[in-house]
Amino acid sequence: MWDERYSDEEYAYGKDANDFLVENTHQLKKATVLCLADGEGRNSVFLAEQGYDATSVDASAEGIKKAIKLAQERNVNIQAIVADLNHYSIEENSWDSIVSIFCHLPPDLRKQVHADVVKGLKPGGVLLLEAYTPDQIILGTGGPPVAEMTMTLSQLQEELKGLVFEVAHEKNRNVVEGKYHTGEAAVVQIVARKPG
Image (cartoon, rainbow, N blue to C red):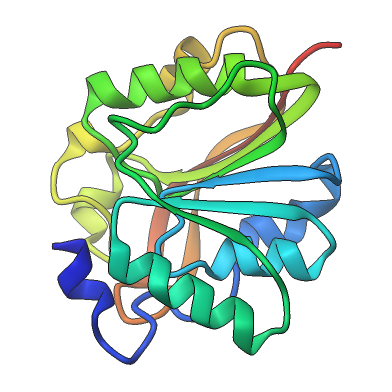
């Protein structure tokens, strides 16, 4: 599905970084940043433009191809990796920041990835995440088709134990990101730091 979606010339979610990321970039530690399920690279390329050492991981080879193309267009470098999060290893204590923007996974895999994120952040490292909540299913303006692949704040607080939440809320906001995310959206937003 994702290779098919990303094989269009047009960027499925646009070329601009996610609003929540742009507004909160100052919260990230400026060094290495891992962008999970980064699609066509709009978020990793933006972070590279801000001086971060950005790594983009996505299961779609077509998405990663377009991420590299976007980085070249913007005259920045990113490390781009084609990998399914089922099989991608987040090394322990290895990332200054991790970014997860609309990374919707089946619940068991999500829990595993979130546990790996907590381990993978260096002490003082930061996770920035925005995802759809179950209310998004009714709104139908993007995101997964089933509620079990969305997230709530209470689930995230459980799955990301060990991090200190500095921003943590659910809200409705207007999301305009290409043709697949457009309109009023129900989201959860967090910025959380690993102690140390």
